Image (cartoon, rainbow, N blue to C red):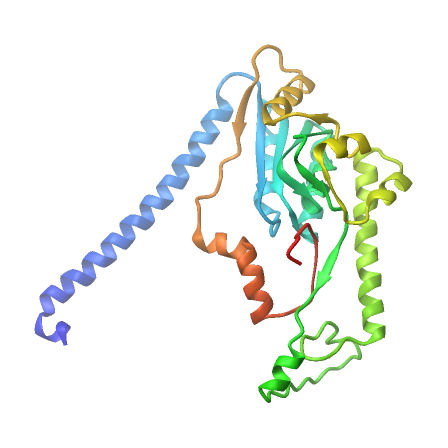
Length: 302
């Protein structure tokens, strides 16, 4: 054993490893603190500004977006907010929470949504809460609908001779089970659930956009639109890029002259977070834990 033959060297290696790990950890903490301090100093600096909150990737959590919206909303130097969306949507709950926070924010400050490559399904849901929406002509948006699904491994288990045993206290407790066929009654229950969640989507868009409910219903069948088509349908207000959205937000917020923008601080890149929010994780999770899911999500692979 190396530790027995060279005890002092082994101790030095262990001690050095602990010191290096501690140093890296403290450096990371100080770096985050400094970054937050820099952001606070930027907000305190003179001049009126437009705050930019970025929403990218699948919507799996609302915490960071809500925190940034609230921070900008409560800062007097921020006169308007742009929420930059590049997302195909995601989980129902977080999308609704962000929408609600935007609706709360527009009561005191102007909020403009700027669409990037894609702002579909839950991505559009979020945008509909803003005072106005700007998209590129080729932005993929729309996809107003709900998708539910689960993987069924019944045939696979049968081939390998594995027999699942389920004990339940209610008839529908294992609805969406991946180890048996879905009954007609269960399919009806899930379809009704999907319809109710879809209805919430439609109503919130109609309220957020000030559109007639029947007009939204006609196009809320899951189809996608280009930004150009969306403008003709009344789903967005203007065609333009991020700078156009910042300019519009700033003028709506009463800023005169040159408009300065400040971005909400981003979390440091985390490979674990990347995996957790990626489509790879969704596929793997479906295989390992094939539970029923529902989402406001545009995903051609489904």
